[in-house]
Length: 191
Image 1 (cartoon, rainbow, N blue to C red):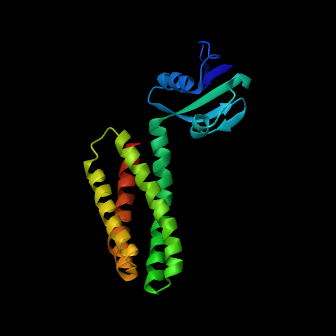
Image 2: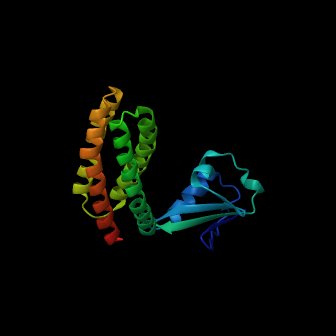
C-alpha cells in the first residue's frame, strides 16, 4: 500500500501500519494544516468514515490524504456562515410571526431547523475562536451571553409560553444574529 499526503509519498513502509498509526503519521507530517479529504484508491471518504469503519487496508493500493491550510478552512467556513446567518435570521422571524399567530405546530417545526442552524454556527465559531491567534475575549463573551439567552428561550418553550418565547427570539436572539454577522465580517478581514 502506498501512502500519500497531497502529492508526496511517505517513503516509510506503511504496509504494517493500522489506521490509527497511519493517521498519527499523517498528522505529524502536517504543519498548520488539517486533513480535508481521504481517498482510498480512487474513492473519496471522510475522516470520520476512515476512523469509524473497518477498512481492509491490505486490499488497498493507495491511501491519499489531502490537506488544507487551517486559515483557508477558516475563511471558507466564515464565508459559508456569512451566507447562512441571514437565512437563520429570516427563519426566526417566520417562527416569531407564527408563534404570534398561535400557529404553534408550524412555528415549532421551523424552530427546530433554526436551532440546528444556530447550533452549527455556535460550534463553528467556538472552533474558529479557539484556533484564531488573536484575542477574542469579546467574541467569546458574546457567545456566552447568547447561550444564556437561548437557555431562557428554551425554558419558555418548555413551559409552552410561546408569546414570551417569540419576544425573546425577537428582542434578544435576532440582535445576537446581527452581532454575529459583524463578528463574522471582522474575522473575515483577518483571513
